[in-house]
Image 1 (tube, helix red, strand yellow):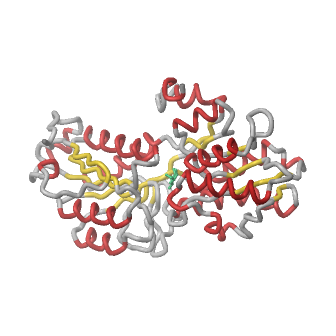
Image 2 (image 1 turned 60 degrees about the vertical axis):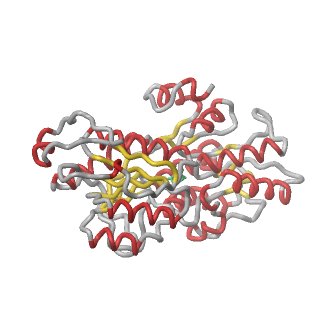
Image 3 (image 1 turned 135 degrees about the vertical axis):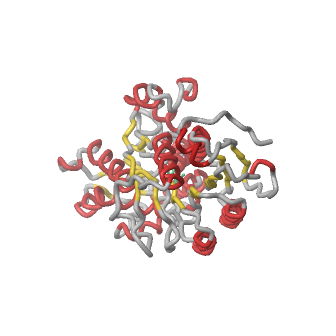
Amino acid sequence: MAIVKPLAALAGAALLLGGLAACAAERDTGTTSGGSTETDTQTSEVLIGVTMPTKSLERWNNDGAQLVELLESMGYTTQLDYADNKIEMQISQIENQINAGAKVLVIASIDGESLGPTLEKAKAANIPVIAYDRLIMQTADVDYYATFDNYLVGQLQGKFIEEKLDLAGGAGPFNLEPFAGSPDDNNASLFFGGAWDVLQPYVESGQLVVPSGKGPATKADWKSIGIQAWKSETAQAEMENRLNSFYTDKKVDVVLSPNDSLAMGIAQALEANGYQVGVDWPILTGQDADKANVKNIVDGKQSMTVWKDTRKLADDAARMVDEIVKGSAVTTNDTTTYDNGVKVIPSFLDLPQVVTKDEVESDLIGSGFITADDIK
Ligand code: GAL
């Protein structure tokens, strides 16, 4: 049953589009049943299609909910789909949204190189596409990109390690185990590139040693240590394998984890191998401020996370949608960097920030991103 809410602000848009009704058609993972009243649109409604990769990684649940809430508040009708990290499911969901008459598509892709043919259909239907958080690659049929500065995310992780170990001061050698994200995610190359640009000189100087031998020769080789679909259990198994194979007579001092889901698995491997907080627990990085990881940060099992406030990203994407629908200039702040292999995509980047135990209260709880109960 469509939920019709009183018209939100933006009277101009309402007049322009003739009385918008807002309703959200949020579906669980993968349901693609067509014909639901939730997606029936009348001429006066403007449907915005939103697709997220999975519910199994915490941040995407926040992204979807926050984006739908914002778009609804602007008076738009939305259809939100999650694809359980299944590429074919995401493709059919996007095609369903095209067929349902979506006026703009907001897509957080699973595999950035898998959507070319689907987006040709969006182009043929004159539907603009916003790549959300992850750049969609190898297609001209992407119009805008809303994300955080993901190279900076990696730099912040690398610089955190550099400062904690006083590498610039010549300290070392330290045992490092680097990890990278999912090989099908363009963001993962940016995260690793940002971090390795900081850390690789210290590997070359001998201040950082990689006993497993899994330090990529160049940042372009990052996929050699990629963890498919960002799965915690895969990162845990990989870390256990490295500890069992290369650390029988030594300790790991620092682990570069590109995000929190990997850091969670790595922490479980460390605990299983007898590492103890305050005794021999290594520096461990992360990203996303997932609740369980923030608790680990408070408990000393993770050193930091790079916080990307998804409320900001939802704001940016919703603003782009509104500007596109109203036909006004779309706000971007980077029109040169993000080449998707076919063209440079005009982008809006937001800034990530480092959160350690000292900033949990002030930044995460203080801003309402999480509550104190979330990390009890
Ligand atoms: C990336 C995203 C990160 C990370 C990962 C798993 O593309 O930018 O926030 O968590 O996916 O969701």
